[in-house]
Length: 89
Image (cartoon, rainbow, N blue to C red; front, side, top):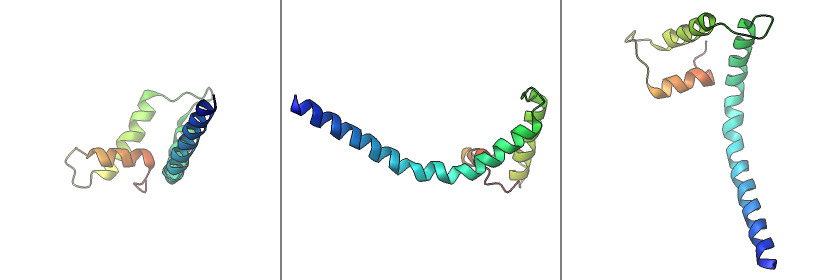
């Protein structure tokens, strides 16, 4: 019975350690996501709904701002930066 309690305590400690290590990742992304959230809320109508047209226009603007060479393509890393709002737009 004591072994079960020790095992559970170790497992809980491990999970808390992992959670603590991931907090800086979420905190670093927080500002970018807040900007994204504000943009989405600004597009929403009185019912809190965003049209596909408005959403796609916002994403196209972000895509175009990052596609400096005008190739019509972005790397996967660039796409991830759109959602973390590291584009400056």
